[in-house]
Image 1 (cartoon, one colour):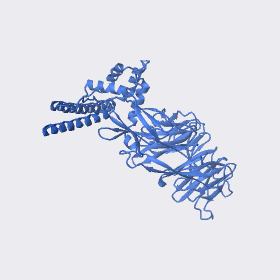
Image 2 (cartoon, helix red, strand yellow; image 1 turned 120 degrees about the horizontal axis):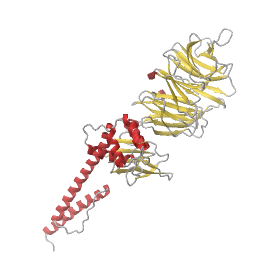
Image 3 (cartoon, rainbow, N blue to C red; image 1 turned 30 degrees about the horizontal axis):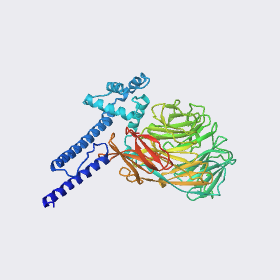
Image 4 (cartoon, rainbow, N blue to C red; image 1 turned 30 degrees about the vertical axis):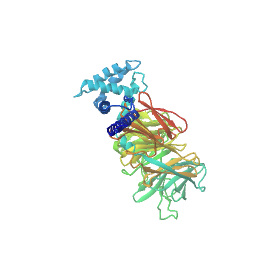
Length: 569
């Protein structure tokens, strides 16, 4: 029979062993740490003390390791990117070009040390940070780095500033397609009249311009012309609200939409007493732009002329600009650049002084085909242009060479516009004729969301942006579909959908989570959102894993696809 003291001692030993096993199990689940094996149940108190000391050492090792990773991450992200003098990029590029197979780790460190502003940073810290930077950039693990890899990385890092705000995306939710059978089947083009609920519709083999109320869902009026309408626009000229149309006989017709003399409210005010037009251009004009500040109507011709008009005096102004003989497809006002941008059918884009000038301020060439839409964001000082094909090009307004291109559309472009968010104008919405829409973050050049019209709406003619109503509308011949947009409320704290997988990356010291079709990366120490990759998969993600170097991640989706992505960008 065991004494009471022996029973008490045995229970105490058993409790101690249970505590140690629980702790070791937790370490095993965290991964990467040395496991201890308890061989027997009959362990004396000295062994217990050894286990407790071992546990303490393990804990200290984990803390030290996390501090080292945190320091290494801080060195790489701050020291290198902050002290890299970008004026030496051409010299660094030449160093890369001199080596056909790229730079090895040793060569990369030597090159970078020549061009870094060291300040008070110790050289051994820089070397350690450069080694970590090399490992981050060399995601394929071939132990060499080429210029394209390095430049893409620093470009991504520069564009990724403020990634937290970028995750606060505007989400577009589709509504049902609706149809108005009273509208004609064969539609040539659709124009939206800003600050109204109206659109102007031109019809094949017809000289009429049909005015339609989108929300009243009714035909307002048909404006008869003597020739086919090429383009039209709406002008809110304080006292009068006008519709201006240009036709293929080179005449410009102005309609007063609030005429008290006509039952319909529409009356022509630009004709002479004999019925002939007062405003006739030297050639056909196929695009219009109204500048409210100068009360000037700009028109772009099929031969590359930009003409200006006084719609009060019903006459052409003296300002005339031409640098191309190609047709002008779009004119956009850029107040912060004190000018206007014009896009041409030959793929050229030109920046002009708004007051007129014989010579362009800038000429941008890079499109393979004609330009049909242009947008500008003052916050990023960035021009975005859409081509007749599926091109979207990004430009610095002060450089006549394209910066980059956005890929993703597979049909001719319909248009694009800058999305104004609460945090600034950093997002772009683009649309193509197949009815596919994409939302882009212009700071990271990432596609944040893709969505499409229902199968019932084909051959989209135009899309209409209505920020005051939180809507965009895709318009076809007789059918329309609305997309309502809203914001994600706490994107910095959580995913919009249920998290299906979460992994810890020891190398980067971060967590990566998958939810829905998106992936996010979080700082393991602070919980801060570091990176967001919305809609990285076209299908819901059901599994995820890291590669052996923890520089890439693989995702498995519901359709059986297994794509591989760079962890950093």
